[in-house]
Length: 213
Image 1 (cartoon, rainbow, N blue to C red):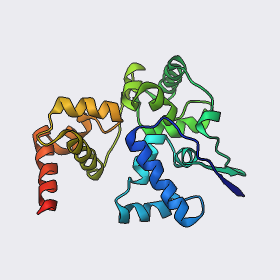
Image 2 (image 1 turned 60 degrees about the vertical axis):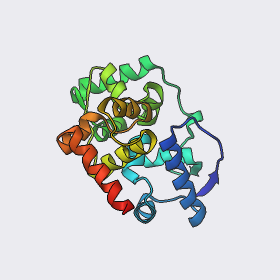
Image 3 (image 1 turned 30 degrees about the horizontal axis):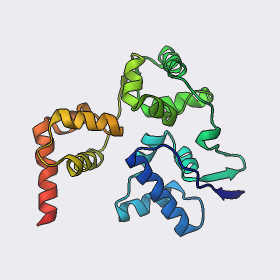
Image 4 (image 1 turned 90 degrees about the horizontal axis):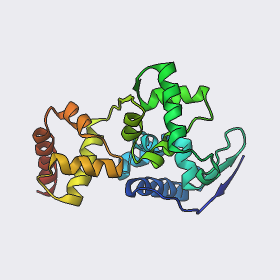
């Protein structure tokens, strides 16, 4: 099994670019295709995005590796995105409607990925987000209820990034628009985890202040 490394660029969000950069850093260090289990250990030590966050952004670890430039020749060949099929918004809506008929109106990324194994020509999470701007927007337009579970650490990281860009006392509306642009956890997910917007902001800002002391 041989490896080729591509330097082709892709239109990615700032967070997606950071994820790909971390994968490439580890690949350069190891001189081989980074395995998810190995990446996880480095991510915890270096405060890199978690494998789960990367999979949520790109649909699978294999697709993230492909975008990072790792193409493998063998049983598990992964094509780079520019070699993958092109999907229109209508194609994606039709696919999600088919999912709904098979699986019901509530969709999670994990359930979609499992369903996609039976429908290999269906668009990946990466293609859906690239076309609609966010997973939630695509699901909403298809009439599906997107259910995504985030860890408290992932929610805290998203709020920290938003605060870093827009300042303290971050408003609900400002974060909601920022989250849509950057494909970050929704305000609904934050409210579900923290109980209220003020509680979430207070908790994260307190963490930031305590680290500065």
